Image 1 (cartoon, rainbow, N blue to C red):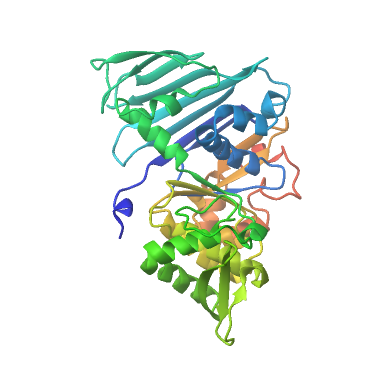
Image 2 (image 1 turned 90 degrees about the vertical axis):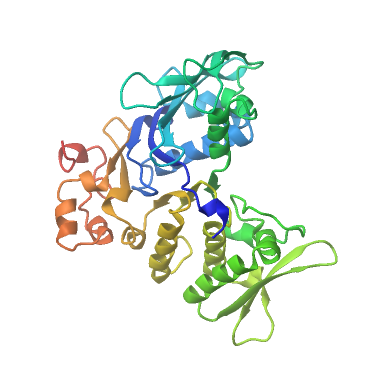
Length: 410
């Protein structure tokens, strides 16, 4: 087991979002290492998923790029509302370590997005007010240095050069601010998957890549890297794939004279492999997921949208097993419509999203819905309960906005 897997990854424990599209006020508490978002079309699953994508892009590409890509405040801010878009992320760097809160409020003026507030704070003991490691309003404020910063450490005045610059992104590059650097490293390491089967069939320029891209367009490059640097890990990935696709013998890459890299898959009955563009959608998707989940240095957070697409339902229980195993090394957030995915997770790991009577998204843990714990204790499956409408707000045929007084526990 690689050294990167020997330490527990950071874990997000709570997320609060305000004024972000349909998420006027949504809070997820006690977030589990493996979390599934369930809900009808238009319930806000993709929007909540996009929160993680937005934050990741802010740190990797810059706030302005992430903001503009989503249509700026006109499209990002909740309809009919004013004021900033606000995120509060609570996480622990390691188990038993202090709970850290990152607060980010973003508004817009004629020049573009502006960081109205940015704070990083923690509560090292069980009592007292949280101590602010980083505290800025409109790019002006202060930060405390040190490994375990408190009021006795050196206080550094901060004045950022541009209103759309994130202080964590700037200070996180300096050794004097290890806690800020740890947050920056954590978020920039997130992998938000928008896997495209067509992109996995591409023939990229040859050369090893350590990390799979969000769309999977460099799958062949990652296979090449694993073959060169981690052949045993690659063989484990192939073994997992063969258990789900029994006639598959091997997967290999082949550089071409023109510089392209081909991804080839060989079935047992045939002498010659075929190009990935002729392989089945499901085989390529399973290969991409297993490659991501078995990364020798896995991302600390992985988001996957609707993994059931293009896959036979009988493959999904096995995929859930891989999700659960990977959640020991990385935190996973999955959106799904599949009862087979639900059958592979626990009731406390499922969040139901729905729109209330005003059109805003709300979220509730599946285990908090009246009757569900009792049904599960009696031997029911989550997938069956969902298909039969026992979740209330998870069924698109049920009137949105009505379930709050029918099925939610008080």
